[in-house]
Length: 542
Ligand code: SPV
Ligand code: MG
Image 1 (cartoon, rainbow, N blue to C red):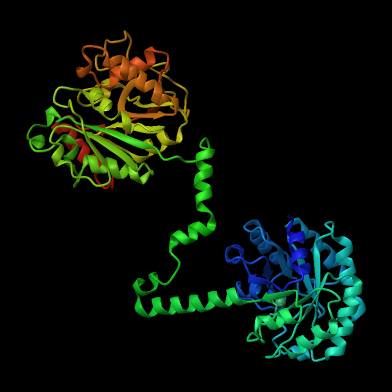
Image 2 (image 1 turned 60 degrees about the vertical axis):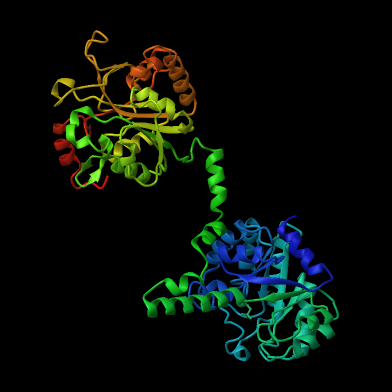
């Protein structure tokens, strides 16, 4: 049902209904969750939340902007406290159109002069609008609404201004005849007597609305007995928030600690709930092409690292400390800093020495005789829809991972295009590609053709080296597992490494794409590598 229609039904239900003040999206959502059937967008509360006065210091467009947030997060009708309509009949026409565009249920206008003052501040000194002019405003509003159910409530301020019951009744009747859908009779007395006297005389000529802020102790049944249609609890959420904020601010200021406050305030989780964070997570899954679905990682860390001698006597090489931090911990921290939190480490040699938090540690059953593919085979259940597979002894600059995760490809291998002859130490995992690195282009489309540690494997110089970093995503997982299964059927599977797998995928028409880099990484195969690694890592957290 349209909000306008919902509000109309509240006014005409024949029972006493209740609406609650809200002043922004958050409070509007809280009002709806509390079970109210409508919201009072109070001028006092709207201006108070910005710490400006209820004297039209907030412009009408600023009011409408806030209403848009309130309307967007709720499904119950909003009745705007539209003050005097922010000007003359013409301003009123434009206001109604703008409110309808934001699916506001209706507006209440009061018969004072622009700029108005809150009724509880020297109310008796406030001038009232002349009756005919105010009726013109009501008519202009009714004539400009395009939805028949949009509601205009006319607020009579005669009792506030001290003009008496007769004047109030005279005005209410004129406003009814001008087309008002309901009359709001306001009073600043501590007892409801003048409002109830009005209600009795009024005798149901049109729905009657009251705001018992001052006469708050009136039993609610009294309103029912007087056939009040709508009771507005007009400012109670802004006041509740002021009291809560003052108490918490004072406590934290005095104690210089959060300990006492923490249990008394809404948890951060509750903020997320009210913001609808879950919906966004679900949407990210649904529209995963554009959303972030966190990748997982499989780190191959089963080998001892024979070139590192006594350094690996009591631990695998991934636990060698580089500038004060084990290589594996650097890797895990780097992955986590990019939201890759589901990390499986496939260990073997001296796995008991692996002391890194936040990983799933998996012991490869064949690590003593098996190679990298035996380890990967052991971790096949850890391959998700999006997995980064990497060597455990790898150090690299963070942007390489960022770019890898940013790139949309089912299979993506990071290849260093630094000329092999300029590399210090042993150049392994040489790669032949469909094109050399064109350094001018980001995300150049190149595919991997073969990987081998033997320079003569292909009959031409290689385009670079695979650094031990591969992303497998979507259908790439199936491709990888198919290739792994084919290789597993071969007798020398135990000796095979990742190069054989990459080459097998390429050979079967599923060549991984290549992400070229130039330097900015190294791995640990020798004592010399370790010296380079220490220089490389120095000053970097991961
Ligand atoms: C408001 O809530 O802004 C009102 C009601 O107009 S009162 O403050 O009582 O005038
Ligand atoms: Mg107001």
